[in-house]
Image (tube, rainbow, N blue to C red; front, side):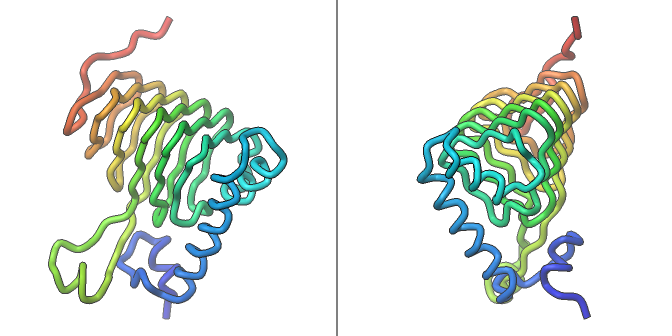
Amino acid sequence: MRTEKEKMLAGEPYEAWDEELVAERVACRKTLQKLNNAIPNTPEWRSAVDELIPNAPDAYLEPPFRCDYGSNIKVGKNFYANFNCVVLDVGEVIIGDNVLLAPNVQIYTAGHPLDVKGRVEEAVEFGHKITIGDNVWLGGGVIVCPGVNIGANSVIGAGSVVTKDIPGNVVAAGNPCRVIKPIEQR
């Protein structure tokens, strides 16, 4: 029999109030508290960033930053998240190199059943992986919904709600987000 965490990481419905998952979220909150109370570029801040997102030695997270687990976030080189970034990482969030997140970006892998019994009474949740390619810039207030892939070199305009995949090398914006124009590389 699989654990609720194994189901969560497989993208299957799982019980969100499972003791193991609650304990991991509480541990994450403690790390976030250290991060969000630290001054950037201090040893305390770097230690909290490294604890939250391992294997990302040059990730820069402007406090405040929020996430569920941190351990499901994978970032490439030169990652920057501006103020008030929220990453609901019940599913994997894979972010490439040189990605910039403007203030108030929200990345949501979490979803819930539409029916009341599953959503409220059973507290079932599921997660769908999000992938953001290299050299992507997400403008202020962008929301990325579960299961979305954003292609390399693309720019997502401020305030956009990304509900479907966006190809590489484009400017996309709106609610729902849609391709506006291609980006010509120089």
